[in-house]
Image (cartoon, rainbow, N blue to C red; front, side, top):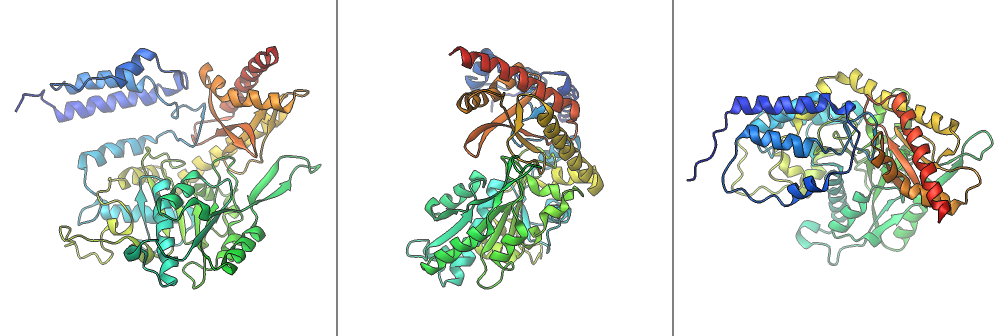
Amino acid sequence: MADSPSYPVRDGLRAAADVAAAHLDGVAARPVWQPMPEQVRAALLDAPLPETGRAVGELLDEAERRVLAHPMGNGHPAFFGWVNAAPHPAAVAAGLLASASNPSSAGGDHADVPLERAVVRWLAQLVGFPHEIGAGLLTSGASMATIVAIGAARHRALERAGWDVREKGLAGAPELTAYATAEAHSCVRKAIELLGIGSRALRTVPERVEKVGDAGDGPVSAGMDVEALRELIAQDRAAGRVPFLVVASAGTVNTGAIDPLDQIADVCGSPGGEGGVWLHIDGAYGAFGAVDAQMSARYAGMARADSLALDPHKWLQVPIGVGALLVADRELLRSAFSLVPPYLRDESGDALGWLSEYGIEQTRQFRALPVWASIAARGRAGVAADVAACNETARALARIVEETPDLELAAPVELSIVAFRYAPAGVAPEQVDEVNAALPAAIQERGAAFVTGSVYQGRPVLRACVLNPATREEHARLLVAEAQAAGAELLVGATAH
């Protein structure tokens, strides 16, 4: 065997901790984001496979220069992009310990199994979702949680129809239908496709539209039209189809809008009830808003869902790679996914079985420790204060937008997402749309603030998301100033054409 450099464990881990700490300490003093130099990109992309090993210190030096020096930007308080959080220091530290332990959290008699079950319970308690032990699990993200939930819903619906989908597959099975608005996250359609149901089975439910503002001429407030949902389900049943799933949102990724969850639950029926339609709530981003006392009433009905997807790696500031699924009935997950091969023996005496019986993954990452640390470092009160701070900053940003010439809100602000656009008076809508489509990249390249764009109701918008409790009104004002300046420059260029 070829010689390799020695790896002094203590020195290497201490050095890594120092590099990470220096990075986190210096985030606010650096530009939010800057384009990666082409030579650095090429060095990473074309790096040759090394023939011999290198010392840990040398590797850390290179990682600091070539990787940490060119971040996505989501640790910076002036980062308003996508739904990506700044990592909580306690969760970062706990992630190192989880990696050092490196178990497979599929099951067995080791600490990560009861810790995961406790953490899942904590998540349920934070958002007010009923919980029986074992009724949920941590996943790689809400996309995987959604696949697991819809897989369980498919299994339950076909089993009630007398069809064993695990044995027979979908060929010849009753025709299933599902329901969501156009604002549903793309992972819903991906899950429907992946599970063999087909995207044509996913019905688009219209959104209700309300005018807001004193004169009734403000931005529109959208949410699922419950009567339209009821009618679509009735039509499909009359045609001999099997409505099996409704996906509602506890905070859309475009605007943070919350669907009328209680009314939708009325249409679907009680969780697990005979004849009911499985209600899955996408709370990946927004469900944690329930801990904000000012917002908790908007989540009425969330506790009535059959399943709820969450992303601790969003508002809880856990490093990316941790989602969660909560369910009303744990046995529905186990019946849909349990498969224990002979080489896996459960000698722990745990009647709940292995965590891998409740989802798709067999070898599972030790995700519970960073989640545990992120919550335990703050407690319920601290988590609630951080979420409320983000919502307050978003409301401040909305007020500033409304007070600022040449800017307008594109949608009401419910949580910590603000959709707005650059819209100077007297400029044709087509030209406004052209400028707004280019505006996010222009703001990003300036380096002072970072915001992403989206399309809402057919028009380009700036979409600012506040997930970092360190983001304050001063950063909101900075974003607005950058949007004004970059928008004016783009408009001059568009007019010159």
